Image (cartoon, rainbow, N blue to C red; front, side):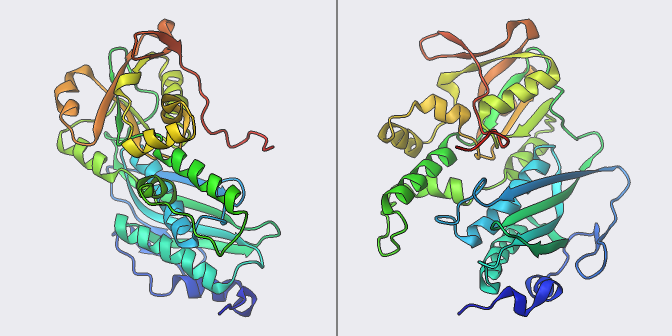
Amino acid sequence: MRTEIATLGEFGLIKHLTKGIELKNESSQYGVGDDAAVLSYPAGKQVLVSTDLLMEGIHFDLTYVPLKHLGYKAAVVNFSDIYAMNGTPKQITVSLAISKRFSIEDMDDFYDGLRFACEQYGVDIVGGDTTSSLTGLAISITCIGEADKDKVVYRNGAKDTDLICVSGDLGAAYMGLQLLEREKAVLKGDKDIQPDFTGKEYLLERQLKPEARKDIIEKLAAENIVPTSMMDISDGLSSELMHICTQSNVGCRVYEEHIPIDYQTAVMAEEFNMNLTTCAMNGGEDYELLFTVPIADHGKVSEMEGVKLIGHITRPELGYALITRDGQEFELKAQGWNPLEEKK
């Protein structure tokens, strides 16, 4: 069954997609249904705002990305930006540009994923917009969060001798993307053939259904650790670490042997004849947290489940370096995702 979006119109579609939304956060005073949402944040809190724009053909390929997964991922990547500031996401607004290729049922699938993500992370949908598109689907989500004024973490606070930490493991999302792209090329649109992804489920989940690291923020708070700098790994570890170093005016040393990599990632890198460390350093879309802490917190972070120490911050004149397993030193280069790079 297919219902054309034109049968509802803009406001009818918004009403259809947002029916039954109940606001959960005290700061959400009034949501969908008027010219603007009404938010109220308590004294002592900083309001954090982040926006992501996702374009079909650039950021996602609907050949292999289910709309429900896309809705979930679109929300979670925004939540991740708020957690990367040591904050808590509270509200999102969702704006969509939709071509005639999509039906109301398609948008229901997208919103099912979006709303499920909001339920999982305790975030309210408080507004947005819809319009028509001539080129496919475009998604713009703005996320609003809060943090204690003295707990907000920026990218520019890293200091010499600070420890460099990452959550989770790296490179799996990139290998999941390579796997999906390979199957797309092999099948060439043949819907009667289903690829066998047995044993590779983790890689696909990391690409199609990433999670924001709310748990790591909670663990840091429980240990009274406020990182000196932090950001999420969306464009690749190398790129993100160089952002921190540049904005903090410091150098860094990262040790190849300490970079966390899942077994499935290693197997797929070998299958694709790719350098495993390059995949982990530059793959992107892991949405793990990269952060620095004072050396005095070494004991706490080294025992923290889900966190790995991968290096340390140095003086700026020492530059950015990757130390290989055999002790060689290579200049760290930002080779991650560049959203403005010309596509070929």
